[in-house]
Image (cartoon, rainbow, N blue to C red; front, side, top):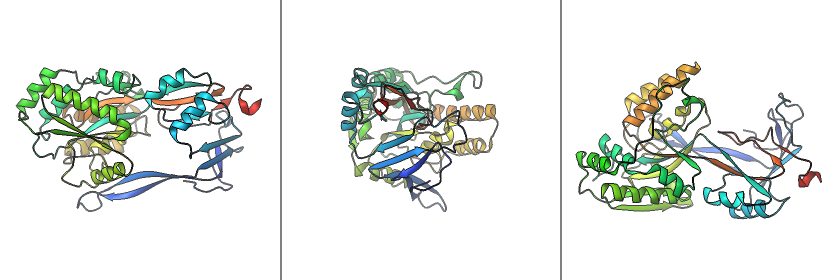
Length: 373
């Protein structure tokens, strides 16, 4: 990580001013020796300036821009206002909320660009919960059958997502030429959900507690209502804001018991588009997973170790499918949806999104852009 200006840099751009660092806190998991995970966080100056690297190895790719300035001191709502109503202030706004997508589409200055990112919105299930049968596979399957994913995507995310089948979002990895018989999302079947819940001993159970990070509040409330209607169980919703979010993530990563929730709605990204389980499944199910809320699953650990060793593309796809199928069959999470990555982009900027990272090497501006007039 280059976190200060200088004459170095092998990428398409060189850091000329400010810094944008990715750092982490080590979190020990329980009392197991050497068992640890990390909570990542960013440290950015208000302004970060990049200049084109004229010695970049792949000139066919770029860079196409002379300079890029990141403005990290503008609140998201103000940045949205600027890109939708002005030119010369903001050219690309990342992480546009689905609730704001329609406003961008109606702007005369900006257009909406969407990418089917390698991301999963998931309900972490507390398999250690007292007073609920969540350690029983049937109860976890009941939760998955209780949720109406199509309505969730339509109403909570304004159609800017796809229902999840297992933890792996649709990607090149899941094409039929690599993996046959792909999983389908759990059907919304309230009667089946009630039957499974009763068979697991859930009838007459206590209130089920749903928690979520602030940006996923709409999702959490929809999930809570679906569960209440399907299972006849009272639900309580808790939304974490600001420092509460970091503390909730830290307690979960440390496997601190007892927990204040039974389902924790959160989102995880993956950088490895060709093998999402390396990050997604490890985070939610793995022994070192920061989102794991329950005992280690030996079958999963064996498959994950096999995936880490594999190098052949087809084999990676096959092992990844076996991992996803295990997690799906055991209902080790509440599978919700894969959200799109949304960008508001100035109409004179040619920007191509990636499924995993934010890249500007190929980005260019037209002769009508404000900087070239």
